[in-house]
Image (tube, rainbow, N blue to C red; front, side, top):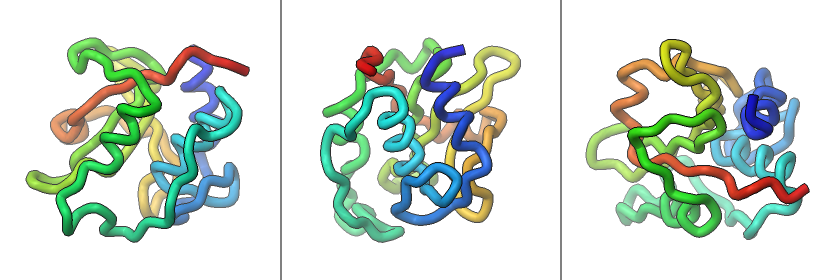
Length: 144
């Protein structure tokens, strides 16, 4: 199992809390990714400004996608690897702003994400979720 998947699974059961990133206390999908980064790499690469639930939607600005390109390695969407960071567009025409970490591949494909009203869970990477993936990234090599 990849170190990223193991770190993400340690967050399962953490309640959903907008803008938070504290294992066991509360997190959102970005907070989960930030926490896994800290677990695997140490300090976060840049501060995260406060954001509202509808952040970047009025402007149509792909803020999260650009941030991922700054700190993660873009991957070929046709090849699934455990530990991949998945970026989702939740509805057509909206900005991409949901994140998850691929855990299983093949027939057991799954991903770990912080989902409002559910907390951090591991969900099947079903066809409805797959259709929403707009980009796939890899964490940089482990540094700690």
